[in-house]
Length: 602
Image: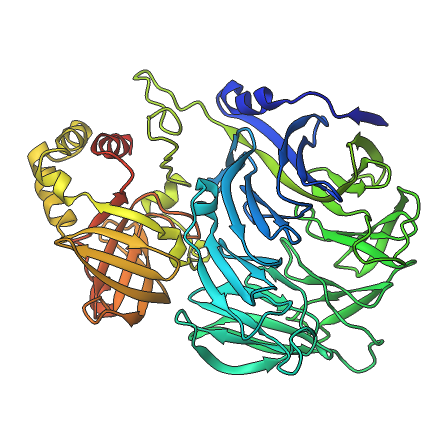
């Protein structure tokens, strides 16, 4: 067994890892973010060798949450009234047949969210909602802004201060409803509200509401006396439906939920010494699993989809086969941690980091590593203080050397201040893909401040681009310029896009409206390749704003856009036939020279 003692900072190693890799080298990186039970500190540890990468002082002891993509870790400090964003330093670019990895030093982004008693902290489709119990409202923001250190939040208010939750869901929000007689008691249900805060449909009862999780395209809410709630996307917004316990189940309640990765299921607590596996698609949706002792903590395995892990108060870690619904292995790891005493006493927490299951041991100042393959202890890491909450970030990917003879490094060396333009899978970019690969996308994929490139074509800025195209294309530079004159033509010089709103700037005047997803359409072009239009319909706003907007950006599944072509008008079907005029927008933060570089690089 290896014993790893935390040593000096390894920031230099972390920062240079990507740059030191050779072309197409496979790189694996896993990091643990560990909060202390009593001290306002988050320690970042290299999970592969146990070195400390950094230690961040925050405002108070924290619960930790990692984003779905792993680029951000959030420290929710309830007693201090602050949520702090940390950039994990690890990010991936999915190319279908492989993923590229970027490894940098972790850092505080500079973003903090303040309020009274932040508690439930929920992510859905790249939007986070921090619910502040002491105020009875959530502050919602987009992750890419938190990583940049500046965030414009929107507030979603519940009916009163209470221990509640808000879940962003497309252009709507799911909001907990407090007990009208006594808001200090658990919530009694949820309601759906639109972008203007107006309730849509009836309140769905769930007395005791607590706990939420996402698996695939479903959201589950726990705590109901008679089951859970399941949320699905509907044509007019989210649909909330009860999933009730079946007759014969032992007395219990689900108040903590995790969502399966790779397999669509939910894992919940059920009484003190049981867990329940929930598959809303099955006729028998609930399967109870008995534990040998009372449960302390549990985690799902995002790498090996059929497994989850449960730590019990006798100091044992158990492997749960979620397909079979049975415990397959158990391993004694720590001294007993009794569940008697205060709910917030320091007790172990579980996470998964690559090939290892990770268990904190706060009273011993240790992190235990267990091989997920052999289910034997593979090491331990000593951590000063009382290591408590833990999340992991990482994976494997390729590091490419894109530099050519001309010295142009398309991914990182083009002077775009961190702006990276990639095509994902080249075949998809060229318009060759299967229908099953296409997935709905939220408006937030195009969030940001965008500039039209039409004026750059007119004033000659894009002349080098036209000349470059002519070198290998079938047209002269002048012919390409005429082609793009028709394609880029627009009088909307700037567009600002939020989570559900779009601002159009025409001759310096602002037109604004709210939009909700109206699905997508797959188009086949004369050349035989295809494209996808992601369509959004106006739900409110200025009368002059178009009823429909349609995005095309060579992507076919959720991913942030780096430029796009936009079609707009009041006739959905007619817009789909427009293939000659496609106003094109690049980030307003880019200079003219940077846009030229981007276009030539394609």
